[in-house]
Length: 122
Image (tube, rainbow, N blue to C red; front, top):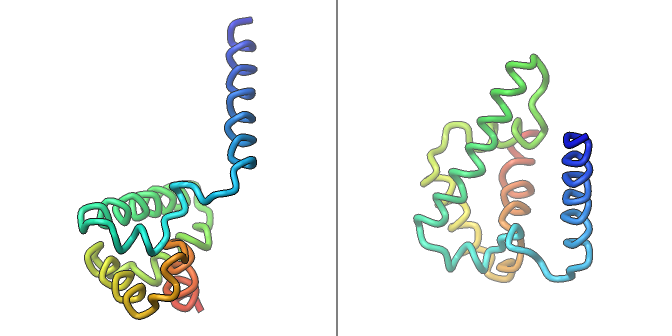
């Protein structure tokens, strides 16, 4: 009985967590843009890239263990940045935003995908 109750509470919490963001109209903190990127310290930028790289590495490991294909994001990340250090990826993003000041509001993941990863995946 307790397990069923806890499952119900978890489902309600999950649904509420998914519904609340639907009512917001502003970009959330997950939507890191070039504005925030350029204002961030080197440590903050590297921490962001560390987080993304860690997620990619974990997903790659899981797909290998399960003998499945990695997601398109992981495959493209590896093709685009597989031989780069976090500092090199940071420099690529810094250089891109510096060369495109009119795109400062563009999200970092959008730039990573469309400017680096998708072209490398072709």
